Length: 565
Image (spheres, one colour):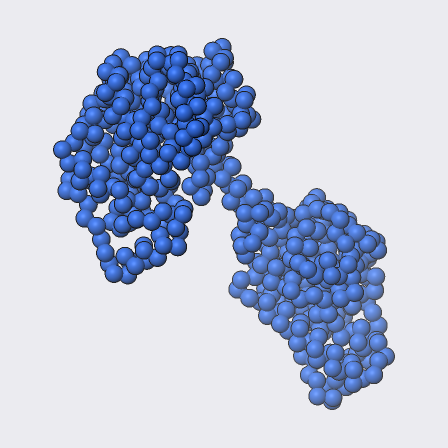
């Protein structure tokens, strides 16, 4: 009993020759189909290079374009030649020029010899196939596809749309239940000859000519008509990514391929010299005799797909960067945002740095520059203080800052005068801890001693901006940890909010407040707010702030902070 090898070749002819010689040396006859797209001179040189191998034949050439009938026609022609010329063949194994035997061919022959009536072909109904990518499952059998998906994508899509709109449906030939599966099969002579010699073959061929990707359904469907025993799996290791594109194996996949225990693998990179040397010329390196089990390496491929589609939290990659909300986590680590604290407390930043051990920046999104901690002009990752560079992509600036400083807690100030394009990015980030003293932006205006008309105009503008920011923080889409206090209630009892903030930054360290930052002098602040009201501007974000009120009011019962999430 023997195994015949059909090779579909369209590129890397040198590697195809090497593989054909390896098959033939083990006693397997080989029939090669070379894509008609290969120039005739190149084809003739390839044929001449194998002229000394008597068990190698070349079949009639067809143009093989992905997703079209030509691949099936090529497989049919090569199969007919194989069955006609090599009568001793009992199993026919379909491979490509990029396939590489991973185990001694003699083991494959023995394996199939022990299963003389078993067809190895992946064959499942459309309802059971989870791997189709492109939105066409059962429709590939009920619509017509006269246009190439690769060369005429516009016509392809428009014709599919037209058929759907007109509700046009093709009749599936009587007795056929469409099945799908891997193109790479190994069929017995009995099953393969029954498919090729079927009296209704002309009808089947006519039908499958306009099925989309017929090489994944023609033999898979018809084998169900004649096979005595089908094992719905391929003996060829072939892995695909989440887009339906085949994984390519390189030299550094050597140990991975050994672990699969499979007989054959595709697609092998043509320049993977180490793989070809190890598997074609190193019998000592052959894998142990065992049942092929590609599932053993599925976990590794699943991790690769997960990394490809999700990436690392807080790190963008080319495949997902243009797509909003495709990131795996907005940022890489927790960070804290303080709104109004540096306005209410003197030297708040150094106090917070001392109390928490975190790196505390000023207003990173201030109009003039990014105020990095300790007055730095650049920070890890070559992030510059320049506002134009920062504001070109403020979200990326924040993401890079957190990514480049992983392992160190980052804190910074934020207010209505800063760049507001970052609002939603922070609000939707579960890593963000945002603490807001609403209305605190009025304190610098109160102490500015500027023209009051200018103060009123700026106060109105800042209040509108902060109001919009608070609406974002209160949105049901917000995932950040948010605490909001009105300024009036905060200064009544600041100890509890400050302790809560410290506990959230580092609860494991059980920090207790031994000293608190000094609050700015707010004498006359109530009258300042009343003056704004008298000028027609209503400062409602500060809370109830009586005119006679000063800062010595902490005897009142503390109010609970507004906890958004």
